[in-house]
Length: 393
Length: 165
Picture 1 (cartoon, helix red, strand yellow):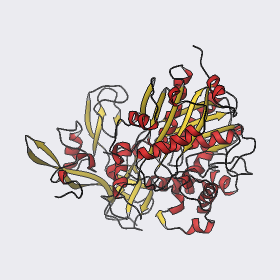
Picture 2 (cartoon, chains in turn orange, red):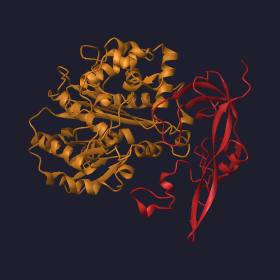
Picture 3 (cartoon, rainbow over the protein chains, first blue to last red):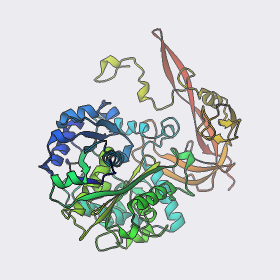
Picture 4 (cartoon, rainbow over the protein chains, first blue to last red):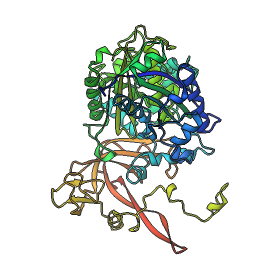
């Protein structure tokens, strides 16, 4: 069978935030919105499920969750039904895997979903479980379980090497909170002022409250299929997966591959491959959803994605180049900072926003968007994942 | 010790909730690392075949796949390149300020470590720090119904006492 072009055809997500719900409740909520988005699709025709979740084993006391997710969704996969875990990038990993299966003819219509129930009856348990999300014996034991200290080191290094200012960090959170303020699924729906962002209580200096994404319960779901089937199922413009890459060069704080913590060669490796696979350059991208787990992350991502030169991420975001009317609108749905970050669901939420942008039905629409990019960072900055979508294959 | 809400766990040791590694020989082929810590030595494995020094230590050389590894000492002093002071939301088991530093060891190797025995505002970039070993709670091994405590230690870095400024 010749290689098939792969399309993202539908998607949905539930309300994200502190949810009075079980993980499997949220799975159903997100899947319902996804199926409602594509009325012509019959559930019996979904032949594969990939479910991205990292914390289901600890916070929901549930491993081997994929068959249970399929049962709750009312689908009966016959080609593959499995869980995918790359923590914050699990959703993107699952989309890449789904695309490969469809391209190779090993699956036809794939449900890619992901989600986490992160709020436990006592919050210490979630924080404590973070020890399992990094190198437990070597980094967890150093109290590196929660990411703020590492990203504070990163921010300090960026400030020292490139002169980045706290105001530029704050500009990222002001923009993303504004973008999320009209997103009914976001964890937060209000705007913040530059002053609020600048004067918020410190978490790990120089990072303060609005520099950090929150802890979030939530799920998201998208459907992928091959182009011919997509044309049968929807009259909307087709959104193709053009290229992708995922790179890891180290797995712990001892073996950082860069010159300093604000130098991300593993991200550059993934970005280069994704652009090559997609046959595009940074200037071709109309809209991007990048991994703003911290404000400093979005600044460095602008550099490593080639939207500006290395070291110029601060002035880039500070002058609105990453906003509507600038060089490239970034995190148009609010990003992690406003939507929140239920790890396995985030890459799928990003894909959903790109789907809507490229089909011209996003809430904060980028006029004429035709090529979109998503980027996920995962773990203690150990891995980077990039997917490029387009209106043409 | 009663466990609220889960009486069946009373008196049980949930190793899946343990912050520290299962250091005992029965559960870890790297137990020599922890034995060396007990002797105040900061060690790792060096490949006898290709000479590669890996950290964390390994049971197989990641470069040449040899299993012929020996324990070697790492430098126990270094300089602070960057540091952070976590003042809010520190993980359970740690107290604020939770201080971390990217340390350049005297052989040029860099690692991130917690800095202990240090107050907020005390540390500066370029400060010299040294390896430090401390006791952590024992792990429990159950053999034929008998619970045995296995003592454990772990490491961090601390400011060198006599500051040269």
